[in-house]
Amino acid sequence: MGMDLADIRGRIDDIDQQLLELFCQRMNLAAAAGAAKWRQGLPFSDQKRENEIAGWAMHQAGQEMAPYARQFFACLIAIAKDYQVQRAGLDRLPSDNSGFVAGKISARSDETQQSTGSSASEH
Picture 1 (cartoon, rainbow, N blue to C red):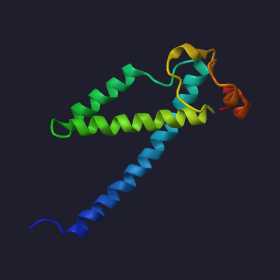
Picture 2 (picture 1 turned 180 degrees about the horizontal axis):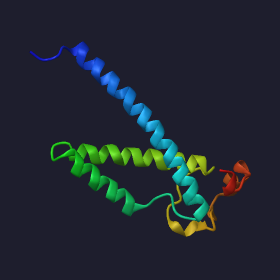
Picture 3 (picture 1 turned 135 degrees about the horizontal axis):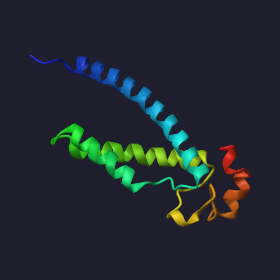
Picture 4 (picture 1 turned 120 degrees about the horizontal axis):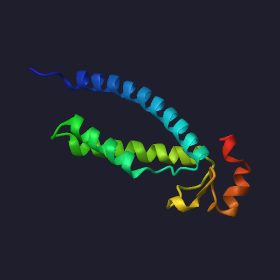
């Protein structure tokens, strides 16, 4: 006989706690990576890296879970990029790499520049 629903939910709660702790660690590292990209004038998006992560996740998860692992990591990456943008004081992710100049985004709107009132080194 299998576990009852209360036991299953208890185990899921334990896993969720672990996931949340790991998520927070990952987000802190993503923020540090975003700051490094910002200082170096690199784009927040790196499609090659994102594809590598998706491929790795799908391989590790196995055939049945592969599409879900890809979706899970795609969500994590999207959330991390949003956080990187927020930490950089921007209102959105630049649509391409052309706005990156010497660690700053030249295509910022006047409103964004005025509202942040800070340089890249302060983020």
